[in-house]
Length: 253
Length: 253
Image (cartoon, rainbow over all chains, first blue to last red; front, side, top):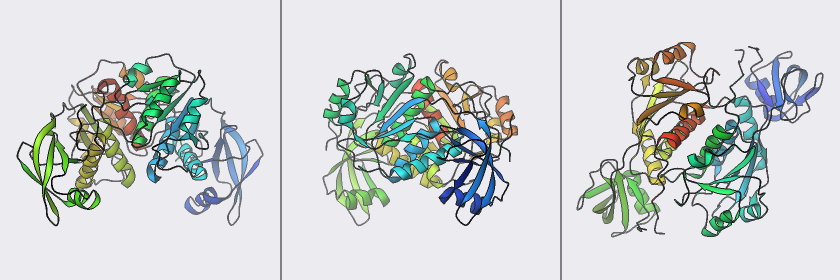
């Protein structure tokens, strides 16, 4: 087993041998004030394009840390093809959705505004920070792309016939999700969960018009919006995603 | 479809036609100050023993509400046989575990103290309040029994050979959960997720000694403790629980 430095940070910087990456803001504060790392301390930086690289702190200034990139520790990941469409909800539950979808393996997070959506704005910077922190925590080497919110009906109007869309149907009108999961694994798919209060009849009608969309039952109880998103992620990723792979990480302590 | 009063409250009281149930504390406050219900307003009360009953407010006093029980709206539920064993974690994430396990359909919540568990106390009253509120929200008519914390090694020492125990194994040494779920459905089973930091080698050894225990892989990422619990609940309940049933509820607005 390869032993690696235990500190991992997501970065937007280009990663290559010899590159100097300057960290600022929370990551710099975390390294210098919380972890109290010194020059020459090792850490790992990662992103979707570059994979994961080990580097060493070269210089510490008041609010910035320079890291010199040394060697690649993991190649860029094959992205799992899950797009998570979800109605934004309030505060903590929205953060739960972003964090759990990242941990479970989603690639794209698409906020969707429905008729019964109460929250119609999403702080995309904050959302990306949560996704990056979740990626750091869970040993991912990328994090989901977070898209601008769109209206459900316009999203469905241009939905691709080749992109399966699995939506949580609490009306009782759909077969259990386990039946759907028995289908051959698509390489890309999307899940959709409605807001608290569910979809309207018009939205259900629009969903039924999308040939590649299928409602699924998630049991006899009415799940909260965040629970439905997490459940749809976990079940579809277990059946269709990369869950046959195993963790490869062993941290040095 | 049967139309019912939309307000549902969990209660420990005995439910039968003509019984008077006196609500106090938060439920009484909620009915009178938040919903501003008046005498003769309808509501539903439920618990595991009695099922769900409709009643009407008979009297409102300063901090108490009397409800006269009228007719049963749902018979007591057949309990799904899932016991959730989890290492207590801090604040919000513990509440997430209790809420989500309740929504997804767990019957028993068993806090387990492991070597790397940082939080060794659980406020059981608070935990039960969260479970009741989740049951009210999700149309359950019971809520999980919440047990006193026990040490993992003593729990495993007396573990029944007839009770399958599915535990999340982040060591990379177990097959993916999907393989395990293909087995015939047990009528009772337990899931176990470790604390942040995982199980110790000694704990893994103890788990391997339990004949009815099986480790499962939850993909290549390292899930947080609460994510692992929710995932184990959702996947095992979908495969083995009551998720072939559909929601039966239509609320009056």
